[in-house]
Image 1 (cartoon, helix red, strand yellow):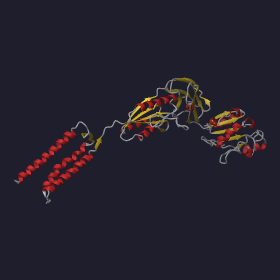
Image 2 (tube, helix red, strand yellow):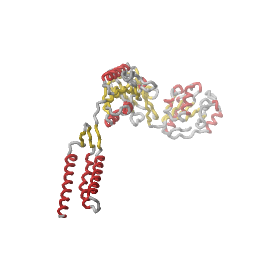
Image 3 (cartoon, rainbow, N blue to C red):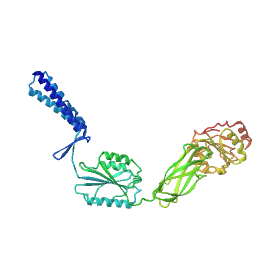
Image 4 (tube, one colour):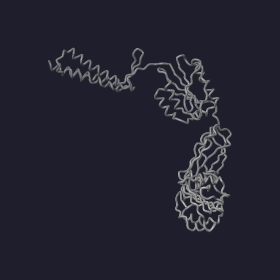
Length: 481
């Protein structure tokens, strides 16, 4: 008799386990939807991870342990113990299954994001205010509408007349606040304005010219937060605008070898413009001035150029003669390229026939020598900075202008370069000692060595010239004579 009860008990446990597994397989494993949903009294409940209900399959194990228990307890107490344990497992399965309750609402909160940057015409801002007013007049009583204007930074605009009248939409006050468009910042501000229990809607009014932030990445985040975004463009034509975005040079430029320069020019509408390319202070020799017919969008303009002297060379591109251009500040761009080559020396000599010996000696030592008369001295520091050393030889003071002296002072003081002057002091009009205009402004740590050339001036000057011979030059920057 006892053996029969054990067999019946085992069969009952196996049947219960099979039934539980059958239900779990049919309603969880083979369910068409990944979640388990049911409705009760008008409320929808949903288990987001129903596979966690598998913890209920251990109920036969609990009943088997009840039959094997050696505890001397009344059978009602044993049954109550099993029920409580199974209840705990059921609650644990529901908790792990992520039970959620879904309610339906028809209340909508709409937030208008209006672009007020300088690229948007003023007339388009008035059109945007009219669109907001139409939505205010047509919205249901329970719906909510809010307005955010944005350029570089977003701002919340308060509705007038207790939320029944659209606010004035205009530019932001402050220097530089309207010179950009950050759609991402405006969308992030909108997240905090949605009241709980409302459907989240965003309407974006913009010309689409984003300058800051990443609107596409923020749109993906808005989707995860349950925010639906609608985009509406302005019907007014965009203002005429031409801008130089970038000036691209090759990564390596060689002296005497032609290369191409690419200019990236943007135009909001088809137009014409004059383009000038400068190499240093002068127009580019190969291709300096061009009249262009620009198409709407990006334009790739190619120039040819060549560098004759090694060192840092600055290229600048300028646009002018444009029929309609709203922002003239972005019509110029400059970039600098470092051209490797021999050390460059500027040799200023009044008599060109006297420069041949020293020029030949420097050239033999792998220097690039540029011999000029005093009247051809560079007119700007930008042109002078290409040289590693400057030599003034037999140059009278009255032929070396005050502007040129100021450039030499800035060349030594600001750029940290050296220069050498070779002539006797008296006959050329230069002062001696601290009264020398080229010696006086130089800082103490800069070297300036004056050398009286043999064969000029008095006998004492010639003797000094024979005693003090300049050292040999070696290639490199910052050489001393």
